[in-house]
Length: 316
Image: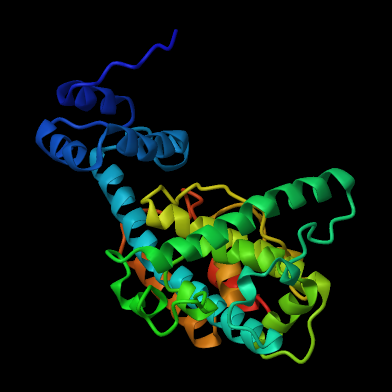
């Protein structure tokens, strides 16, 4: 028998927050909980409590509010740069793939993919192939649904009965306007090796790319994808741990102290952003830190020398 949790009244939520921070006036905490909700607020409280010995013994509510606001502003900033990577990747895939294959709908054809991802391990190969079957089916269904949804996508009327392209599938650049970043990164993961290399050559303006290059980029894209999801769903960034971001062999091991934390996502962003965007990202993060009362470094939200490490990251 499933046991459901009982709802918690707002007055009870206020009392429960005293486990994490101290306050004498309930009004501010009540207003905060009415907006953020107890579950979300308690995540920040637990984060502060886990570091209570580092900062001080009595954590007042103002520290909680400051931490929440810093995290909110950091999400707003990082999602902007995640979106820049997303747009750049979509352009590189659609332009390169369509020209290389001379087919604007190449993304829907199974023969342009490597279902096993070239995996040598038998179990992983089997799992990859199984997942690919679901992926390519879902992708084709999404394209069909987009074409057929008159209410949501009236601008695609030429692809519907009575239109001049009624018998055509959507070109990749059109489909990319409507599908999520996760689907696009999965597409890149599964594309044939020769297409993947061509895409990187286009994206990074390189004359040659290897298989190991494509595998490195896979981890960077995955790191940025989950960072974007954290930001889009307003999840707490500080203290986050997620998928592994691999270090470029050209970089010193010191440049990437941890491959699963928040800073590792910033490392991945620098690798995939233009030089100008990467420089602006650094400046804007530094500005956020300057304008917050949160002790970013004592709380280990970012490494103390993150700016120096950031500058040492080599271009891909």
